Image 1 (cartoon, rainbow, N blue to C red):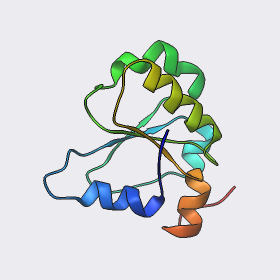
Image 2 (image 1 turned 45 degrees about the vertical axis):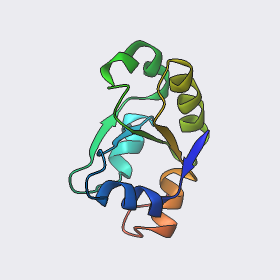
Image 3 (image 1 turned 30 degrees about the vertical axis):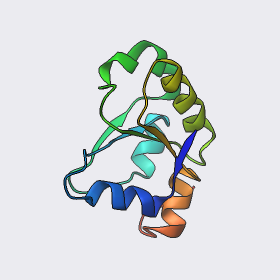
Length: 111
């Protein structure tokens, strides 16, 4: 399983000529409302983990996908699922939004 740090995600989203990833947030809506990653030009899709098996066809299997949750456990499960569905450029955000807040953007609330 491929892992990215928050800083890796920032680099990936600003790399010239590289395809822009989609940020797949697999948390619950209340969690997303409480704390979310905002990067200009980066599409974020809220798809709670339990809805992924029914909705993964909404994703482009060629576009890089970075999965995120609170600490990285749910998103790791979603990465494994997407890999089994044939997605190759799929990554887990190591430490989830909690690590993002601690390492990249302290303005994102921790919960």
